[in-house]
Length: 171
Image 1 (cartoon, rainbow, N blue to C red):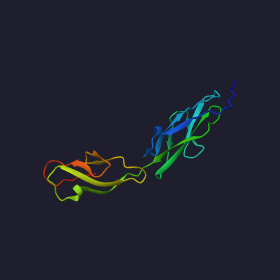
Image 2: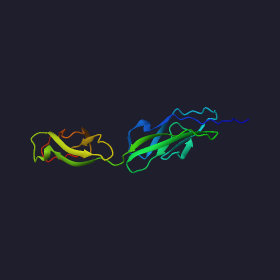
Image 3: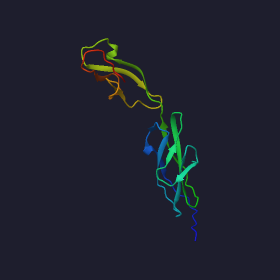
Image 4: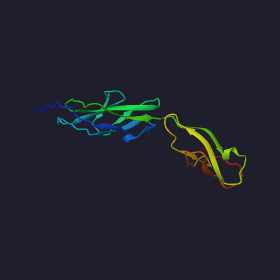
């Protein structure tokens, strides 16, 4: 006996990295939603790629991997499923912004570049930017190793170490 299956499988949608807005990795994970095979032969392949129709197919899984490439910017991943009979679903897609360029701090000072202070309570002034996304956090350190978030708004409150002497604050 042989099963005749002329019906295309279905794939409702796919999501890059569980619907994340940004990634800094070229390796992403897709989540397939609504994959089914109404013809009954069974799903055999998950296909993903950056062009339509997608060309990279693996044994069926609801969470196949995909690869994106630079430069920074919006990347669309296309998805399909195939069944054992060789039928292919319609193409669905999702997009994510690839951001591998770190943010930059173009200006930084403690207490607005004052030469000295008589208090451990200080303010850090900075200008931080990111060309692809928004700056999510800025962190400061008194020892260059242990960093604490100071938020993204300048100036930000900072506490200097209590021993008198020259202080180095790192962002």
